[in-house]
Length: 313
Image 1: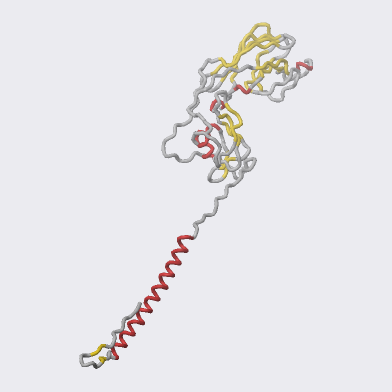
Image 2: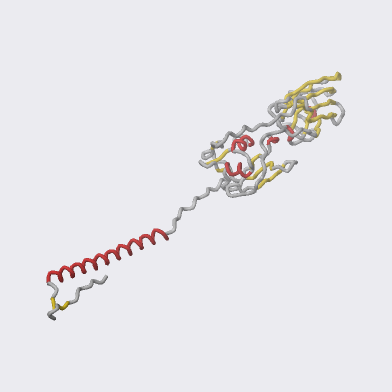
């Protein structure tokens, strides 16, 4: 900033009029004050500009979240049961409509290899997701009591049973008069995995009986052909594609093409897996009783398999 100092002016008489000394001192002081103020203002502006530039252009960074890797098997010290989180709107509880009572889901006839044992069987629905086996026209000429059971892995005739399977039931002792009886399959609400009906000796002791008729000796093995109607449910998983935290693979599908089972990948989260298949966390837990997770975000265990088929329950 420039300060204009008044020039010496002449009087009419030609005599130069001099500026008073006191006024010159005042003007000089004013000039110095203005110069200092401008300089300070420039410094402050530069400092503010520098601070603003530093604030405006400094990148805002956050530490990347670490994703834990699930272990191959649940650790009891870390595991806890999966729980459904809060939802913004009510979600209907999952349902599964039982096969109607009286529906015959398997049937056949049995004859032992030597022709000494005969009977008919059929498995019927009880209407409450349970089943019963009905046996009729049982006759036997072997001198020991005979029992029957359902197994998932068929043994061979002559083997000794170490496991009595599902629906273990005594048909009776030696008889030429046809008899009938019924046995419950217990809590089996989807028995189609039981592939064999096994007839065996249920004599208490091998004393006085041939070796082939001793306790638990297999007398006949028959394959079971199941015909169980698909049960209706309000849970319908659909695979919407792999994504972060739900990157596993569908390992089996139902006859209709719906996902049936899912192999958990490292870092999979319960909520994200449920979202991938278009179901709620409550539905996923219902499909997988006692589902184990770890961490507050409910990480799933790598390498384990989830059920996605309501009819498999």
